[in-house]
Image 1: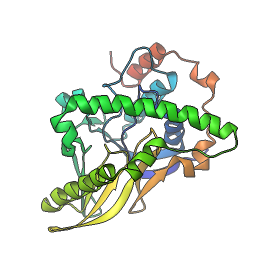
Image 2 (image 1 turned 30 degrees about the horizontal axis):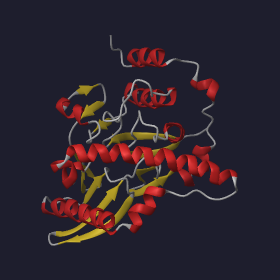
Image 3 (image 1 turned 60 degrees about the vertical axis):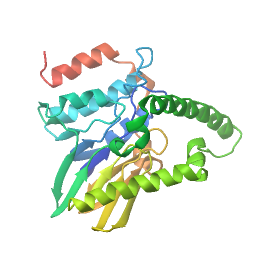
Image 4 (image 1 turned 180 degrees about the vertical axis):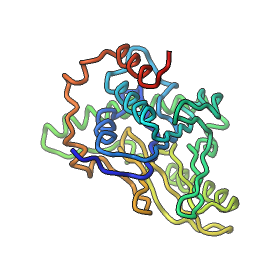
Length: 279
């Protein structure tokens, strides 16, 4: 299968290590594209909720695929988020084409692009981290219940429903939080003369023009791989939102059970270290 060429891919809020993560779908997407650069914009591995009891082979296969890109000398930028914030202490770390940084500034087609996770602008994160962690656990439980309900609903011939999306769309405070987040981010980006600002964190995929007192800024958010299954792609001098649910090519890629069980997690880790020539 010929892979689709993409100049830049931005992924965020994958939350590997949680029950809500759609690792299989993400792996299919990654196998369907040939990126020239990859930006991992936070919350890739969910350290907050990580458990040794839950680390499926597909989660490790996603990591191995990303390591494979690094082994091929494809630039991979890792920007830690709040759920993998422990990696922020490794700011400036390089391993082959991998670079860990807390924010990224790029110039693309003479436009300045500012990329960061976005949790720094979350008031709850800054003032009540324990509350944010509690909310993350509640969100994960809601996703698990949602999957069970959707399984039954599909068996009955009915469509899927997203509980969290309904909450976000109906609770005024949630809608206000998203709007305030976008306006705050864009205001600071405009003050610093950026044309584009790219975030993750709020699990809300978006590309839109925001007017600020200091000028217009294009705000972009890559969404997540819990509910929306989205990414940002830059190709042909244009940014766009990728949606897995609208991609029959990626959906058709076979990630069979037999393929998953060929290597244990330990064997996968060993093969990754070999690819990177570590150890």
